[in-house]
Every structure is written in C-alpha cells, then in structure tokens.
Length: 393
Ligand SMILES: Cc1ncc(COP(=O)(O)O)c(C=O)c1O
Image 1 (tube, rainbow, N blue to C red):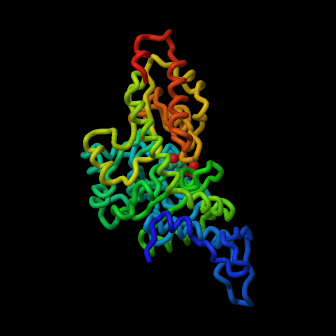
Image 2 (cartoon, rainbow, N blue to C red):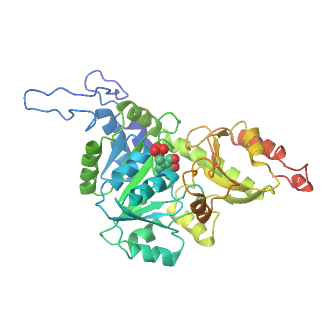
Image 3 (cartoon, rainbow, N blue to C red):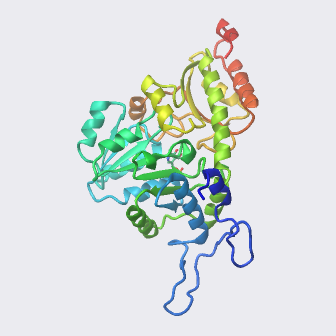
C-alpha cells in the first residue's frame, strides 16, 4: 500500500519498539553501543557514525524528498559544509548571488583560501548563467525561493543544462518537501536547515543533506562521520516530532502568508512585496508549475514615509529575530541581520536594500497577525499622518 506524505510522517517508526511496545520510538541518547561479542558489531557502534533515533529522522526525510538516503547534520551550515567537502581542490562551485548569507560567507571564505573556486551568478541573467555553466562546475548551488527576495529559479531547466560532471544542489529550506520536490525536477541533492520549518518550533538547530543517488548517499554518510558533523540524538528526536506535523503546519503558514502578502500589496505604505508568484510573468508561471505550495515567507520594502525602527518596534506578534519557519511569526531586517555578513556592495547588487523587511509568517490567527501589522503601519509614519493613510493598508 502506498501512503500519503502526511500518513508516512505521522506513522514513521511508530510501534516499532521490540522491548516494551512503546508506541513512539524511544530516544537513544547513548554515545556508544556494546558489541554482541568479541569481533561482532551490532547495527550501531558509536553515535557519531550512526544512531537509531537519528536514522528514524533521516529515513523519513529521505522518503518525503524522494531520495535514496539522508544524512542528519548538526546545523544547516554543516549540511553546506558536508557537500563542499565532496569537492577537490580548485573545483568550481556556481551559486546564486542572493543565496543565504552564511552559505555565501563559507563559499567565499574557501575561495579566498584557494581551497575551491566559486562564482556567484544572478540565475535570471541568461548570458551570465550560460557563461558560468559552460565552465562545467562540480556543484551548481540553487536556492529557490531565494533569501530574502524570494526570487525563483527554474530547477528543471538548470538541471537539464548541467552535464553529468555537475551535481545540482537545491537548498529547499524555504519550501520544505511539501512546497517543492527538487529531486523529482532533476536535482542531485537537497539540503535543509531543519532549524526552520522541518523542526518548526524554533528549539533545535539542525540540517540535512538528501541524495538522490545511492552512491552519493554512501559518500556523504561516510564523509559526515569523518568530519564529525552528524546531528545529536536528542535534536533528531525533536526534529522527528516536528516532522509529524510538518504538512499541517506548512499549509497553515502558507495560508496566512498568502493572505498577508496580498493585503500588503494593497498597502500604500509598502513599495514592493516579494512573494513566490508575485514576480515577473515568467516567475508567476514557474510558481504554478514548480511549487506545490508558495511558502510562509514574505519580504517587502517599507515606504520612505515610515520609520522602519518604529514600525518594527510597534509589532507585538512579530518578534525581531533571525531565522524562520517556526510556529511563531518573526520579522527580520536582512541588511543589518541575516545578510550583514555580505559586503554592502554585494547586498546592493543582490537587490537587498536597507528598507527591506522579511516576515516569517507563523501559524497564529490570520486576523490577529494582520491587526498587528495594521497597528504598526498606523504608528510608524515619520511625518505626521498624510492623506495616504486614509487609503488603508
Ligand atoms: C536558506 C538557508 N540555508 C541554510 C541556512 C543555515 O542553517 P543553520 O542556521 O541551521 O546553520 C539558513 C539559515 O538561516 C537558511 O536560511
């Protein structure tokens, strides 16, 4: 029988405990496992290399993404580190110019040290992308929707243009397997910061790399142990608990965000709203074909009439914090927070202005969230109320 993703997640490893019949799989915190007898190992021997609780989490993520296997890492950045370590000295990585700031920082650091070569490209700039892919990179790094401008990249088209020497990686943190299925579109690896929607409760930092090909999976599983970057059993347990409700939560994040994005678009105090499907006609079409759901992230440019600090300070239901994907709503100012590691010039090229704000829309009541935003708009005008206000938000 084949089951839906929701059923698979809710039932994963349920009632598999042979000793006590525990319905929920126990957490195996032990760092080491005894040998059956001299020279005879059991399935697990040492938690850095393998752990039953971590395996449960890896197995369900591999199933949800349609991969051959998954490695659970200690953070999203260790998932990035893991893939970068599949490279040889001087290998070229092509990455989107507006990728997550931490990914940008790591790739740039390794390039400056002469360990790898790296080229950041605007994937919507056709000649630039062609020129980069013609160099036959070893990794083609795709982040779609991008952070924080939620620009879209056509995964299938990029994968089709890469030769067999190039592994295509998609950072699927923003959309989860319920919003987008990169492996089915031709990607070789999917990574996640599981810190975000996958765990979903802002109480774990973690990551995962999921490989489509069994050989690639073997390689990354070996490497993760070698590098010592596998996730802890307790974090894996919490993440597995989060995965059981991922689809339900993600649908609610999307429902709230979609409504707020449309309302923000009507506001006279918002200059531009970035939300998957809101871009060019090409992006609108791509959102329809590539996405199962649009996601819970919105970015927008606050109009000059508003004092940005005052706006953020007025909010009660959007905490000023980095990160995203938790049940609670957050607001971030990318230029001074998530993307501060990026040089100002690179931020400018990537289109990240100082008036840009990013929302991670949680699962609170939509009308409460909207009332909070409306109140903040009303109280953030740097000049005294102008007739624009009466047009509503
Ligand atoms: C898209 C994306 N990828 C990777 C990461 C890194 O994940 P972590 O913070 O879990 O190391 C983040 C963190 O914000 C992210 O937003």
